[in-house]
Structure formats: C-alpha cells, structure tokens
Image (cartoon, rainbow, N blue to C red):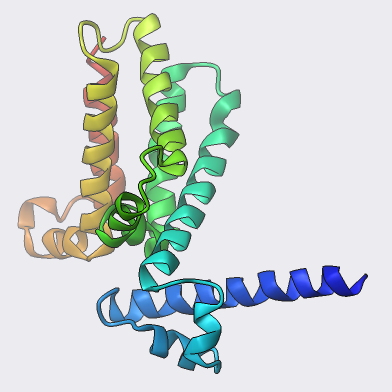
Length: 211
C-alpha cells in the first residue's frame, strides 16, 4: 500500500470515527445537546480536527442523514426480486419498520430532525438524491400495484405519501415507547401479543381492500 493510499484510508477512517461518535451523542443527548466540542472530546481529538472534515454540526447531521438513506435504499433494492408489486410493498413496509428500530439514531435525523433539511436548503441542493431514490421506489411500486387493480382512481404519489406517513407514525410511537405504554395501560389491548405487528397487519389488510 502506497503512502497516498494510506493517507486516504486514514482520512476516511477518521471521518467515519467522527460520524460514529456524533451518532452516539445525538442519540444520547439529542441534536441540540451535542456540540462539536463534545464530539471531539468523545474521540479524544481537538475541535479543530473535526473542522478539517466538516464545516459545522449541521453538515455532520446531514452526512449521517445520507448514510441512513443509503442503508434504507439498499434494503429496498433487495426486494426487487419479489414479482408481485403488492407483496413487494408489504415487504418494503416491514423493511422500513425494521430499519427504524435497528437504526433509530439515523432514523430520527432522516425523518424527525429539521437540521438536515435546513442544511440542504442552505446549500441550494434541491435534488436531494438520497431521499428521492427511496420515495420514488415506493411511488413506482404503487404504480405497479395500480396496473394489477389496486388503488384505482387514486394518485400514486398521494397513496405513497399516505403509506409512508402511516408507517412513520407507527415507527415513532414504537421508538419512543408510546405503543408499549398504551398496550400496558389499555385493557382492550391486553390480548394483543405484538401491537406493532398487529397494527401493521391491520394497515396491510386495509390496503388489500383497496382493489
């Protein structure tokens, strides 16, 4: 390995170390409670070192935001081999929920925190490629479902928005403990073993009736 290659690998490794530390602190303290100085302290470097890689905390948040979308998109692409588009949408829903639970730190930066969106707007980047890919995958699958009789007379983008916002709400209730709290304190829900799974399956049955 040449000197330049070693330098490049070291730079990439340190950049990832910064992102991993920021992710940990964002999850622990929240975005507002995390500073560049705290991130630097976490990895035992000076704040100056952080600024060699990122101009500010918002850019770090955006980098994690991009990382999350790359993971989510890769998990969606695995489902391309499912022939039936409705079954594919169901699998996407399960993958989305699984992603939100396994990558809760990235999930909140992707879909809750305002800062990554503000960073995109401040940079004048209106394309937002990483978010576009995930949403267009959902829209295209809705259109494929329409070709076999689902969602007749409805706009594909609106159906996609409804599906996404419904699952997002469900994920947030689970991530922040509200689903489990409701199940514990509402007697009429005591018979449900897995309220997340049951609610998702009910949502799918509603979609199935839209044919």
